[in-house]
Structure formats: C-alpha cells, structure tokens
Image (cartoon, rainbow, N blue to C red):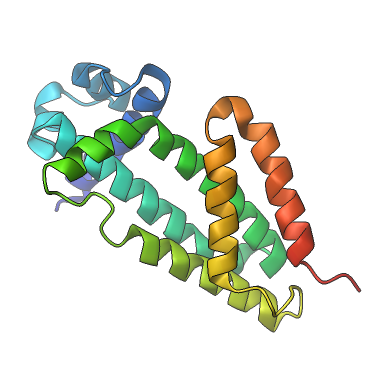
Length: 182
C-alpha cells in the first residue's frame, strides 16, 4: 500500500472511532470521511460496507492497544508502563463498548471480528508483567490471566465515558494490590 493510501486509511479509522463513539454506529459514513479529511470515494474504496469499517476499526484499536506495550516499556519504568497501558485499555474498552452491538451482528454473519484479539491483549499484558517482575516491582503470585480478568471485570462494571473516574480508581486499587512496596 502506498504511503498516502496508508495515511488515508489510518485517518479514516481514527475518525471512525471518534464519530462512532460520539454519534453511535448509525452515524453517516460521509461524516466519517469528512472528519478524516478524505472523500467518500476514498472511504468506500478502503471500506466498502459499514460492517467492514466497523470490523477494521475494532481490529485497529486492538492493534494500537497491543503495540503500545513495548513503546511504553521503552519510555517508562515497568510499573508506570503497566499503569499507563491500563488507561489505554480503558480507551479501547470504551470504543469497543460503543461498537458491541455491531460487532455481535458481524459475528452472527459468520465473520469473526475478534480474531486473535484476546491472545494479542494477553501477550501485551504478559510482556508488561514480565518487565515488572524482572524489575522486582510486582508480586510474583499474580498471573497475567488474573490481571486480564481484573481488567475485564473493571471494564464490564465501568465501561463508558461517564464511569471513567470510577474505572481509573478501580485500576489504581488493582495495581496497588499488585505492586510490591519496599
């Protein structure tokens, strides 16, 4: 894919998250094209149907979330990287929450929008926890699947922008329980 086409695709996906989150999944695709600064033809060339766009948005959000783990570890101490990544997880869940009905409808047609997302997210959590463990900063009796379950629980009870502060408090409580204090 040419660099300009790749940039346009990324702009469309970024705009789609914003528009779908604020206006819902019934938002006009032309609105997304305008928000992205591209023409409708460019949007439809990349995403011929609403369902294809929604699935691509979801997969893109998962990829951004998982790609953030090594970047955060390169920039921050491991515990701070884990804490920052959990905030990105909340952003991901908020976007997913807004698309859940559409994702279910896509799955009902036989497509699997979730693909390997669970494994990708688990791998990101594992890499963050491994770095924290190597630094001697977290308990060793907690497994990545435990943190994943805690994050999913927080997401289920606190999904949506209106519950963001509560979700962050619950994340802090969970991470504080994971951290070893000198």
